[in-house]
Length: 175
Length: 140
Image 1 (cartoon, rainbow over the protein chains, first blue to last red):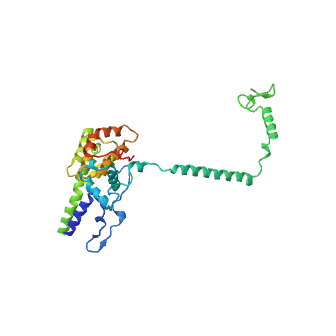
Image 2: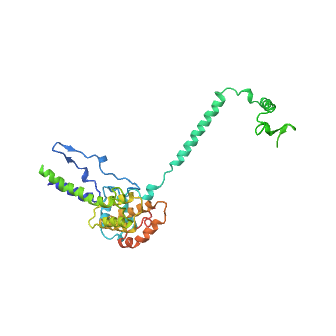
Image 3: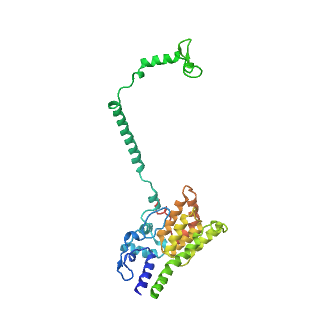
């Protein structure tokens, strides 16, 4: 009998999404009590794809809120804007506009990227100075001049490439 | 043993069969899954209007219906939304009514013209029931 009453009461209260009764104890087969943990109960969450969550956001209503809920049963045209917003906030935590607004996380991401790229640059510079030995002599401009002259003498790529761009008559690069 | 069975049927029947009555109607969306004919838009709308027009609809059914409807790849017709808003009125739930309007606006995505059209179509109902839009309440 008591069980029926609890079931009906649960049903009735679940109509307004209150969790008060659901946290009470379930008796199972006379073995003892199984406590219903908080995480196992329907939870509130703001989601675009789930506009009406299983429970209200505010579960324990203050006296003001309770009286507002009573007023809600009458005509809604008599409610002021503040009261309507208050009723909304009882049932929901964030409005769609609030839940959809982006964070400013991207700024931290870009900042982090630049920071680490900068750090890497410093590491590379240090390496260049302290780790690597001197550059080979083949990079000196004197050597390079001799190298180019040798390539021209050998007629490297004379048709369309390197030597084709050199004017052998006037000993200068073609314009 | 018998009492346990009765208990289950009283509470179980209530909680299982009633939602299921609501579930079978809207969830069978137009699809060829069982080789049936494709449901027309009017039939789809009519089904959902009937769902929300149930006189003794309960809060669970409203939530389930709304969440399912929002899950579909469409923005509901004004007549479906009107039925849903009236269901909110029967349940004395203004917050859900406002939430439905927000959800529908969000559902339109980049198509900005849909929401004003819906509000325009729903204006008589909104005025009759005294529902303010989220814009009127400054919630956007």
